[in-house]
Image (cartoon, rainbow, N blue to C red; front, side, top):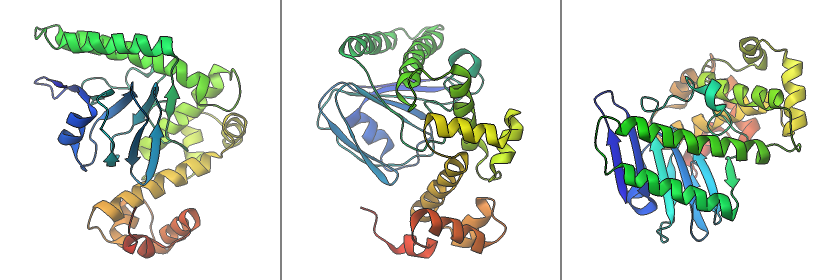
Length: 280
């Protein structure tokens, strides 16, 4: 299965099994938002520099800019849904979905959700409806695909609020603060490196943000920022021919020494040591 919708406005939406998805994307930088639903056996996937095992009935969310380094597609029961911002802009529709920064954004851990057997059955039916919609190439096809995608995202947002925070039944205001922060970091990490800069954008104090993160996931906002910077640095060092100095300035550092100090603090090795190692 490899179904693709595109229009004259560069909207892109696709529904694929893992085999066709891997054929189409290979090891290139992902340009779309991706929702991976595993309806089959346990599967292995390596995203950027981490390997994951997805068990049956789990859903994984993959950001644009990611690299899928390896993918087990021996089972045909994995479903990939890809879309770009021209098809459905998460930032623009954030008030409707509360998705930006919860399912897609700068995360301490890869967002992986588990669904019940009942919910999985409903998700399978939703995929079948999506698949059937590709047989209707009329003027309303794009709108219908967007409605079905929106339904899936809402289902996942509900699961995410239940599963992605360490506190049971966290307040919506607090979860919104975390997801908005994570969405802002994903958007601005190249030029904003301080918690106070993001707190200003959110009309919050740095202390309020720190307390909320500590309560809901045990991490600090600064850790989210620094982890995101280092992830992008790894991508640039591993997948491009850019020099460490070029990467330093691209990530908003005025001096290579400042960047190197952060990178070594986060990874335990210098940028030059990372460049020469073999990624397994």
